[in-house]
Length: 185
Image (cartoon, helix red, strand yellow):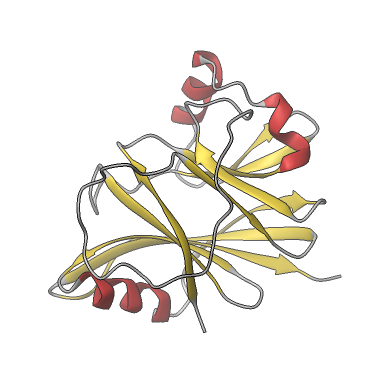
């Protein structure tokens, strides 16, 4: 069962997902952001200090700007970029879509269990709100006062990132999806 835990607005910039232990090393400086832009689509993480950060590169084929919706189930975090009417249906289609065929990306360590998700143009010293379970948005409305990042608790360990680039499950819906699934050893 997926629960909506938050949303951020993007103007097309890339987002990072990392453990709080590595925030100190991300300053959002131009050379760091430029290095992300140079990554090949199949590269899903980048070194940050002594750790790794997952890279959520917005899929311009879905839309260049808009909402990145964050969901959580018992073990997995899902970040969804979706379009379609009704919007809640588009989000549901993205979450229900099978993971078979997703691009399996890099492994990201989360040793503290405190995961941060924020715009790569910002430094890691932001004060982002803690994600809270709530009702998924019913409509896609332009941002008025959206946070540029979120933080949320996850079980400690390593997470593998799976990416589903622009997908059209039907004629009225398209989405991109990033799944963070724990690897238990």
